[in-house]
Amino acid sequence: MKPNTDQRERLRERPQNKSPVMFQTWDDLLFVHWEIDPDQLQGTLPDGLQIDTFEGKGYLGIVPFYMKNIRPRGLPCVPYLSNFLECNVRTYVHDEKGNPGVWFYSLDTSRWLAYKIGRALFSLPYYWAEMKADIDKCISYSLRRRKKGIEKVTYDYNKSFDGKLAKSGTLEYFLLERYQLFATNKSGRLLSCRVHHSPYRYSQCDNKQWPSDLLRWNGFDFNFKEASHSCVANRVDVEVFRPQLVA
Image 1: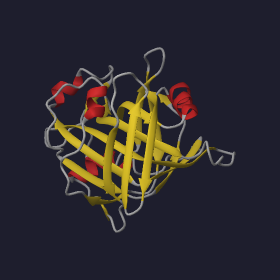
Image 2: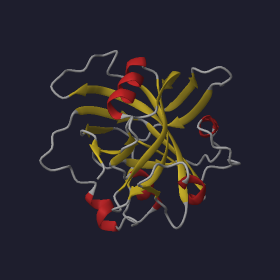
Image 3: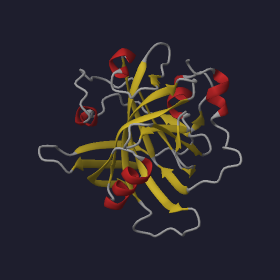
């Protein structure tokens, strides 16, 4: 069952009668997306998930950003451990009941401990990478996965200062307004994990020529040319809730 408008908007609401297990801040985000035939993506998903589409099109995204102020509930931030870089490769999915979310193919991080915790506690495909970001009005964000033969990739983009909110029914709403992720545990069971934050304020990017190397690192051999959509978004403070088995 494809998500309807009510399901998409309902997930923007904070989960009731639940306490977050972790707090995070996501900042200076770049979203770059390529249109992909949904049938070509469907075979990469576990049972129980379907590719979510916008006007019949599937999307693959690369999202580099800053992770800040990370802490479990009840504990303070630790400067070195609580702040690092991350970059994810993702697509958009829904479960059999039509609940929309994100499926991650990879999450590269500059912190070894974040890589370990992400895999152990949230069953997410984290990788430990060499990463660096120089920030002024323009951000130069580079990463190289710690694997022989992989070259460094760099993304240059501007900070977002006066962004706008995505309107329901638009492509930006479809790509940005996601408040649930899916993963599989070691037994292959499907998990979902809710997050909550204020809606992104985004600004469009004029550049359509972005490196697609990370997509190839994840086994995609499509002929990637111009990105179909790119934008930047500024800071959101995030609550992360406990992963749950999908019935």
